[in-house]
Length: 156
Image (tube, rainbow, N blue to C red; front, top):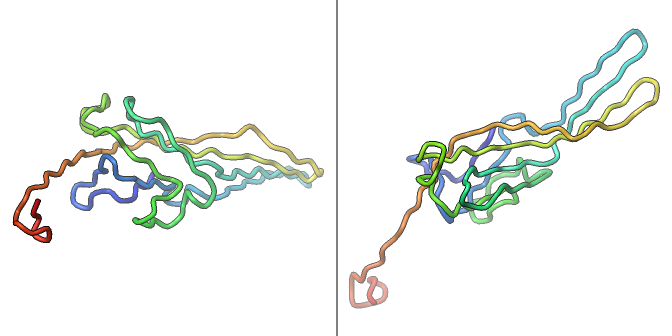
């Protein structure tokens, strides 16, 4: 489940040129193991999350970004965008998806290993799981005007 940090509290959208931190939500970033046995013989397969990738879904912007390790679940610090951060350069009004949202994709790449009662061990090719989420991205422009003769009054 994707988690986006620093979305607008009232409207739930991200902003152009404002870093957006993304995280692996829920229990999705944890090692998982499963074992099987037949009599005295057993095998255990373990999947460990290693890379979190965010594809912003903007065909006119920058491509996917990735982060790894503890960054995928690190606490959000507004003053310091994390390793799992992306900055949109376009608003989602340019989206080919629906003209309002980008269809983002969050993927986890897993390293998969195995061990057995016979002393064998090894690894399988990495495996990737993905989920999508719609994300609205707004662009805000400010206009500065002179409101008084002194600099502390907005003077020019």
